[in-house]
Image 1 (spheres, rainbow, N blue to C red):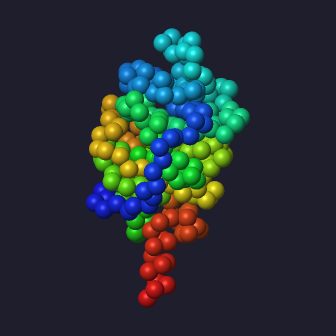
Image 2 (cartoon, rainbow, N blue to C red):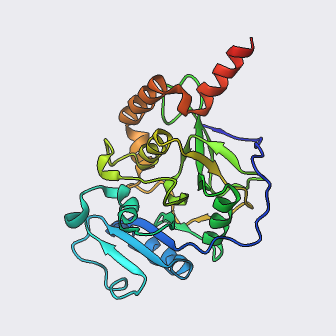
Image 3 (cartoon, rainbow, N blue to C red):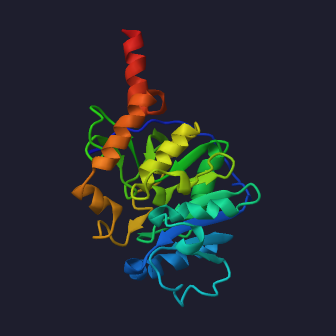
Length: 266
């Protein structure tokens, strides 16, 4: 993977007041993540009006979550076995214009995180999907794991920059800009790619926001049960899907679009 060293400035408009739209959160967790889930939960709850939590593989809702006034627990038996895609299930309960923020159970988010992301969305008139971790596809577009240029969420970024795929543990959007429906996704083992394709299909631009380094901090990385660890073992499904959507819709992705512009100028 390649890490970006240069960043493209998109929009330096200043906003003094972030929108007062409801802040709705969504995340998925599972029993093996209990330790990090407990550590990160207290930091995000005060920033949200409501948090939908999809409890994957749980026999019962954990006692330390039951009764929390802002938390709405979701179970696979009631909402489909969508695994990590469950962080988007809460979207279907939105009944008014809102801002939706997704979280991962192994990332520590700062106290002002939701407001930073809300301000970034407002900076782009709520017409983009914003994130902190993301990537662009790069030639030869054969390997989903290798043929990407990645900006990790722990790195700083001096400007908002366009990307193809956003790490969904850092994604934020206006409810009228993006309407994810994980039940319609072809697989529930590649959340970032599925969400990126869904966003591209809907014409929603994906942008990583400017921020200081280490705004987000990993509590753990590359756990045995992580999608990234699965990707290291077998990336065939993700690579086939990436190749397919780039071949069928090159206009959706930054690399092919830039190549087309270059060819047009030659």
